[in-house]
Length: 343
Ligand SMILES: [Ca+2]
Image (cartoon, rainbow, N blue to C red; front, side):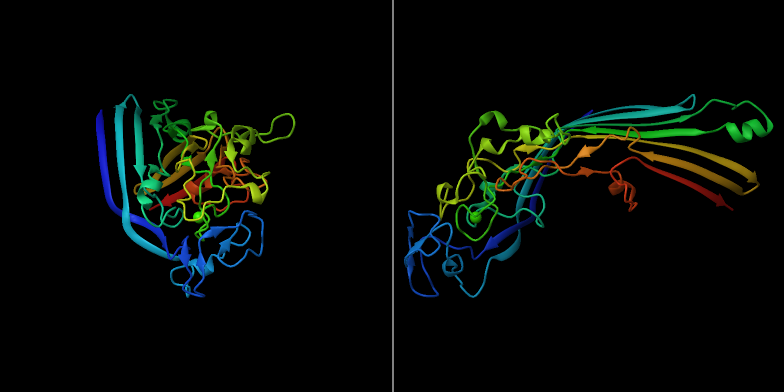
């Protein structure tokens, strides 16, 4: 039993510089952009105005020669706290097992610089502080090995063929990883589309969006778990009525990584036997089954509110990621059999 606490500093973070400012005197044409057109759908606002349909992003960058500039820095940090419990049974009567449980929480300001990017150019760490992409609140892992007792005392061919088989397995059950919901358009008109929305229905907050099956009406259940009506602006809201906050943080009212995908139920087993052929020569047989129960693990739903399929789960994680096989039927159970002659 133990307690782990890990502090990470100087982790890689992806920031985006040269974002469009508001208000700003354009270095390109000398026009002061400081007013928002009352008609957000206006595609040709007057000089000095911007609208959502015509945000004039390129004219409002501090250096108009460039677009958004990706700046990879060491500004990210993390905290990991975990309570760990482990129970083990050593080999005894051909049987051993080990059970490990971790209750943990990981917080950081960016877990993967190749994906998420800072919401605000200034003060980005505060805006991004949230659960790590890889946070798993509960995780249980069971491993075991068992030498089957059949024919262990027999003789001749029966023992040679049927005795000495070893069964082993690994079961992992874990909570789902968190994900963020995105507004789906550039709310703060800074030229970077990773803004977050406003949460209208607090009951939805922190929900597990974990069911990719269809209800009797044919609707994917995850779309009911994460309804677009719980957020503002939902996709059926016209562009002119959406939130438009040039110069704002783009953080909405919703933090990063506030919803959860489906947890993990991995059940893998192997059956193995070594046949001795003669002195120094053995034949090793091994059959491995990944995802024995053939249970799908649903992937994250569509997370962009403006998407027509927002909230819908359309894919599953699959065992092939762990087995390393490239198979077309990769969403289901994977079986591998190997025979090895060692001399
Ligand atoms: Ca933005």
